[in-house]
Structures are given as structure tokens and as C-alpha cells.
Image (cartoon, rainbow, N blue to C red; front, side, top):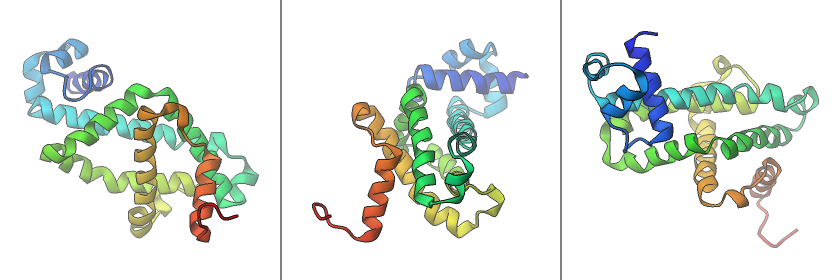
Length: 199
């Protein structure tokens, strides 16, 4: 790897170990083995490098998530009830959330910084549609190329809202997380217009 790649890898490590706001340029240099001047040369600033580290980390997590359906759903589930597939995929995603707490904590920290960091907000906003597209592909079991822009915008936003909420919830009440079946039951209940307490 060259200095640019080394810096990005170092920044990603710092993101997990120290968090976004607490990472300094010197921390990144120590983690990467590069020199201080190379941050400016390759990325323009420490903040620009850290924004790229957040995006790269999320993309890697998303790519690993894309492997979940193949591992978690058999042919019958994939071809059968869409809510069964929904539940099976969420179970695998929830397992990852439970075991990758440093990543989840870093992502949630970044969410809290967005209102006051325009550069970070713009950087994440630029890749948000791609993330929605990827989630639709995962949950519907289709290639990214088959997800149209409107589905990515509407359905992808739904999955992003669920994922973000579950990440936050996992940090607050990890002992009270729903299962994939719980989420499917909730979706079934809402779509049927059932009222709480009625059967």
C-alpha cells in the first residue's frame, strides 16, 4: 500500500479505537506509519481524511452485509414469504450489530456531529442513496443493478431508518433488542392496521 492507503487504514483504526472527534492527526500518523505532511498532500486535511474513513468503514460493513442473505436464507425462505426473508436477514444483521460494538459506536457518534459539521453532512449525504440501494438489494435478494432509483429512495430510506434506529438502540439497551421475527411481526401488524391490545 502507498501512503494514501496507509493513512486511510490508520484513520479507520482510529475511528474504531478513539472515535471520530477524539482522533488527532498525530493519532492517524502513529496508526498508519505515514508522516504528518502526507495527510495534507493526499487528503487536504485531517477532517477530510476522517470523513473518508467513516464512508470507507460503512461501505466495508455494507459489503459484508451483502453476504448475509446467502448465508442466512435457504432457497425456500428466499422464494417464499417476503416477511420470512425480512426476518431472517434482520436476524443476521442484528447479530453483527451485537458483535461489532466499536463500529456501531463510531457510526452513532458521527450521527450526533452532523448538525454542526457541514462537510461531514455533505460527504455522507452524497453516498446515502447508494446505501439505500444496497439495502434494498440485500432485503429483496436482487443485484444492486436491478434496484430502481425510486425503490432505493423510498424503500432504502425505510431500511436505513430501521438500521440506524437499531444501532442506537443497541447502545442504549443491548439486552432489549428485537429479533428479526419481532420486526416482521411489527411490520405485519402495522400493515394490517391492527390496534395495540387487539388480536
